[in-house]
Amino acid sequence: MSYQKIGVSYEYDKDNFIILNPDQTTERLGLYLSAAVEYMRLFKNGRIFIRLTAATPPAAKKINYPSSFNLMAPLSFNAGYAIPIKTQ
Image (tube, rainbow, N blue to C red; front, side):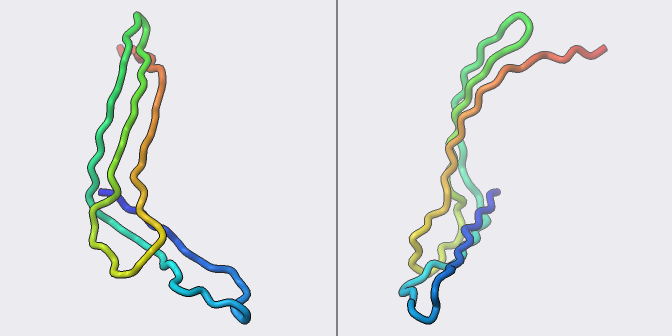
């Protein structure tokens, strides 16, 4: 499950300007798909890894309103070094 909210607020001179077709705050909760590719190299005392992850926007009911915003489809890049912890 994924939740995304795009908050919209306008700060302008309301006496002299009118916003035609303003955006509205959008909230969505729904399922999403995600996939990752990872490269890992083992060493004697640990491992190094690099991962690229891509996800779709949450699949949810569409709003019947034109908006200039789309929900995010995250792309993340992770890299790190893992050290084994010995337990007794």
